[in-house]
Figure: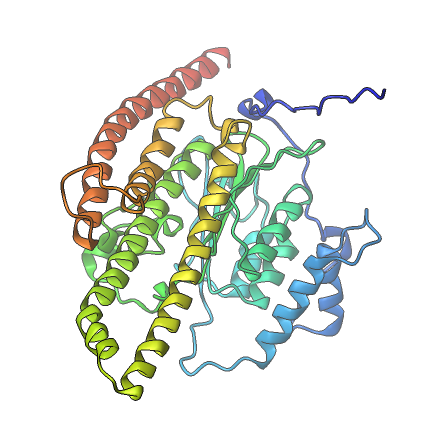
Length: 428
């Protein structure tokens, strides 16, 4: 007989070292290689970009390099009927002690972004009064020029997280995860095609990237005077906060990286709920409105009418199958993330985390499970209208409860932060 060893289960815990403020030497990845981009993207520059995406620990060809090369090649041959603005990036650098932000133009092109990111994050000559403890980089419509600017200015501890994020965003891969490297101190999470990533070495000094390819171009929207007065954080809604009813004020930053990510994911999930609800109700309504015509066509003896019914049913089945695959993939990824031993446990020590995630997913999951069941449990009719009402009622009740608890939690954190600063001043 051969004894079988039990699989080793690694504890999923948030390292305590991340909570402590640390000084880490983290130079730029390409600092010793000199400039990559001077005027345009040359073959030599592309080779340097390849270096940032090659896995030197493996003899297997890099899929990341293949994805990036294909993206660069496609971008060169792509033509747009409506040209985009060249400046599509926003940069928010803030000092932890003062809360002040460095001054940049509202929208930055790739060259301006690289120039800003090339300045020292800490003890900068160009920004002597503000360190970039908390850095947020938002880019709408990621392009090769912006990829080069990001890779050129990324640090050694950021490059792995950045290249993984860029590749997943370019390849439209869906994932939600947290990565704790064995030898470095960074963590990151991803969300669908709107990629939101956090990378850093403690709770006070970290970088966030957000890449978005939404339908509405935020760089082309005209703002009125009232909206211009609000400095909105585009990580949450791509600048559509007033329309979505949820505005994250950039001048009131959330310093805890996990709390910030959860806040952004909460808002993004609310938007996703609305989109899925609208999609399901709209498809159901269109099918219901076609039922009388389909019955008449089936009962008729016209071959042409029956052929049209057959084509319509085939296309509808194909659409429903595609929607089912997309939603099943999303739910599978969420199930892995939130399962026992999943990456959600990195967040379990945060007060109210489980409740926040419960509020985000429960309304849609419960509604879909009930409306997809074979038998009725309640007396009301199951249709598109009652589906929307059920989601709204469930989400409203749970959101109010979560909001109250979040206010209490936020007040407690601010109190602890002030007490910590007072203790540090007394020590000095």
